[in-house]
Amino acid sequence: MLSDQSLSSYEVPYLATNLRWINATDDEKSQYAGNAESSDVSHPMTTRATGATSIIMDGKWDPRSQMPNQSSILKTTKLVAVRLSMVPSEEELANGRRPSDKDECPTVSAEFGKLPPVIKKKIPVINGKGTITTYDCYILAEAAMTAGMYEAQDCEVVSSNSTSQSYATCSVSRDDEAVKEDWLHSLSLDFTSEVLKYSVLQNYSQPWISPDLDTYVTGMLTMGYHASLEYLDEKTGQLYRARIL
Image 1 (tube, helix red, strand yellow):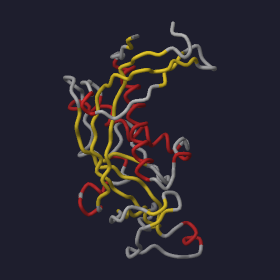
Image 2: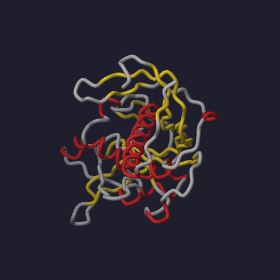
Image 3: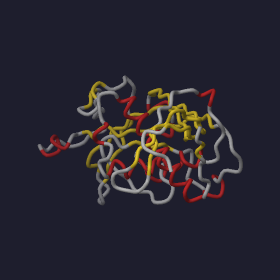
Image 4: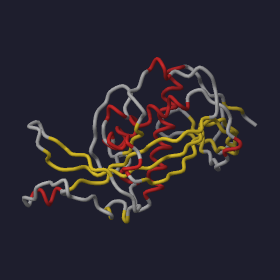
């Protein structure tokens, strides 16, 4: 058993992301922003929480075609949607203002500050009577991703105060050239949106919201990817091995 503060080397999941904010008109898939059917895998459920982040898939998820058949290093670009706010706002609606298709999404957000100067996507919110009650505003980004496994050095082992398990804290510098092949990266990205949805619903992501939208979204994608990969790793039995140096 490893003792506290001992240093080890571990092969850990690696995900590096570069965001490019785009006009919603540049990608026809932007019409599916906020549509759980286009981002979730198993139990589609929509959340309209501020900061909700999702990856819009190219089509409905098909488990028969998504299972990995070989290991590789993944280099891909995904369309990411982030919910900002709604127009009219709750306060404006309470004061009797009615929604209009001429309403524009804000350029400044109370949560994220000044937003990237791109065209946002307005998605109508419709009640059971077919009436538009408001519009949700989303900002879109192309996320260029590199995923695989990485040899993390000098990981510090720390014992948990609440369990009998030990954990390792690793600092991984970005180095796409040192990434190794993995089996579960594509599948993990497929499940990332669902992980992020429940993180937002349980307010786990609220402390991270800040005027630095790039850091927030990159951090959310990284967290969701690692969480979904860990879950899939346990379910498939492909446990990643640690090597003590």
